[in-house]
Length: 74
Figure 1 (cartoon, one colour):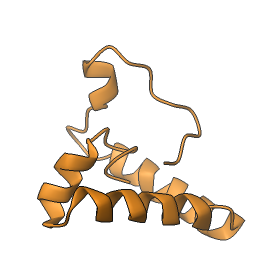
Figure 2 (cartoon, rainbow, N blue to C red; figure 1 turned 30 degrees about the horizontal axis):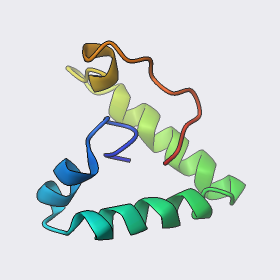
Figure 3 (cartoon, rainbow, N blue to C red; figure 1 turned 45 degrees about the horizontal axis):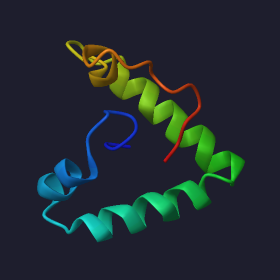
Figure 4 (tube, rainbow, N blue to C red; figure 1 turned 60 degrees about the vertical axis):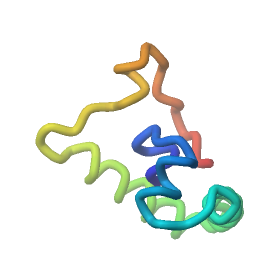
């Protein structure tokens, strides 16, 4: 979620959670595969919406001039 939902690089996610980039990459792949389950996918979509509704939240992709990926989950 931090990588796609917040637009963080894998390096930044690794630093935030004190894990290697390879661990972050593996976790992203696993979550992408897990999102094939509709119930989990819907739950994570809702969680992303809640985070984005927090006061002061800004889409980092828009700040960099990039469009937010619709439905992208990697």
